[in-house]
Amino acid sequence: MVTAQDFSALKLELSVRAKNGLDFIGAACIVWAGIAFVWTLPYAPARLGFITFFVGALVLPLAGLLSKVLGTTWVLPHNPLQPLGLWLNFAQLFYLPILLFVFSRYPQHFIMVYGVITGAHFFPYAWFYDTKAYAFMAGVIAVGCTALGLWIKNPAELYLIPLFLTGALLLLAGLLFISYRRHRQVYAATAGPNAVPALA
Image (cartoon, rainbow, N blue to C red; front, side, top):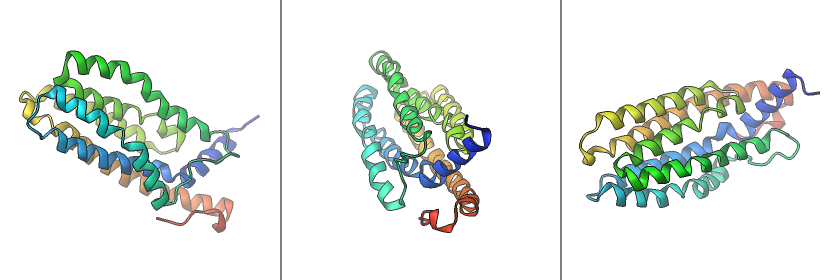
């Protein structure tokens, strides 16, 4: 039987080894900055949404590249919680029908819905990595994108939504790094300094 203490130890290892998912957040920052640029182009929202699908697909390869730069670990065979992170990522795929519906019927609201989905999917990672930053920023992003979507009347200003999301992701990255440093100290005390990955 796994105790609460065991769960805490497993999550602590995930937090330190994966550095709270900073590689994915860093990739998302780059991608959403690119999406913000796309939405400044003088095209109809439908075309911009179409381009956004392709730009958004760059998150995974960019995360893989940043994983090598930051020295994060994606696979921990001995940690039974590790596969859950992958399943939480795949959960986004079930939001795709909503996104496609909005894209086809209400393209001017596409980027708002995409932003809300992106922010909302962070929420369970607050438990996974044992850091409240994910939960807090999930709410900030979801509410912020919705508020901007309601406030913006001129389609030419829709780029403000991905621009807001880029800034929110940068803030999240900072909060996650602070949490990682704190978890790293605890992990070093329990697992030994040789078990702690190099700080990137």
